[in-house]
Length: 238
Image 1 (tube, rainbow, N blue to C red):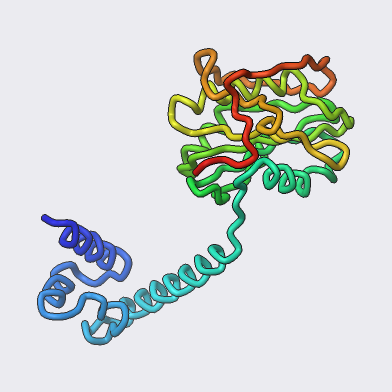
Image 2: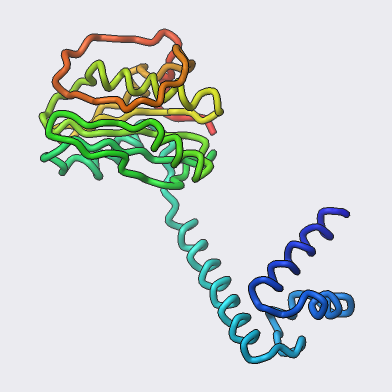
C-alpha cells in the first residue's frame, strides 16, 4: 500500500467515525466518485438527517480551524534571541511584585511559541520548581526548545546559586532527549538578565537527571560563574 492509499484509508475511517455513514457505503461511493464530495456535496451520498447534521458540523469545524490557523500564523510570536525572550518575559513578569513565579515557554524548531505555562508560584523570596511538570508539558507539546523564566520581587538583579542550579538540572533532563534549554530569563526591577547573554547556559549535562523539586531562593549569596563551553549567543540557530 502506497502513501496515497494509506491516507485514503485513514480519511475513510475518519468519515465513518465522524459522520456515522456506513463504511461499505462510503467505499462503494469512493470507487466511482470523488471522496471529497462526502463533505463538499454531501447529498450526493444520500445521507440521512442525522448524518447530514454531523457532516455540517464537521465542515463548520474544518472551516473555523483553517481560519483560526491562518490568524495564528499571521500573529505568530517567535522568540529567536535572548533580547526577544527578555522583552517578552519582562512584559509578563515585571508587574508581579508580591510573589516569585516560575514560567516556561515551549518552542517549535522555528522558535515560534507552542505553549506558555506557569510552572509554580511561591512567596516574595522563593518558588519551587517541579522538573517532572516541565518534562510532562514539553513532551505533550512536542517542543524542540525551552526558555525558562522567573521574577525577583525583591529587586536583586543577579542570579542566585539556586537559579544556576535549576538551569543545569533542567539541561541534565532535556539534553539526552534532544530538547534544548536555550535561555533562563530573570526579571527584576523592570529589567531582565539573560543567562544566554551572560554565558551561563551550559551545552552539556554534568549529572544524571534528577526530578526532585528544586527551591529557588532569591536571597542566596551570588557567586560569579562562567561556563567555558556555554551558549553565549544573542540569536539561537534553528
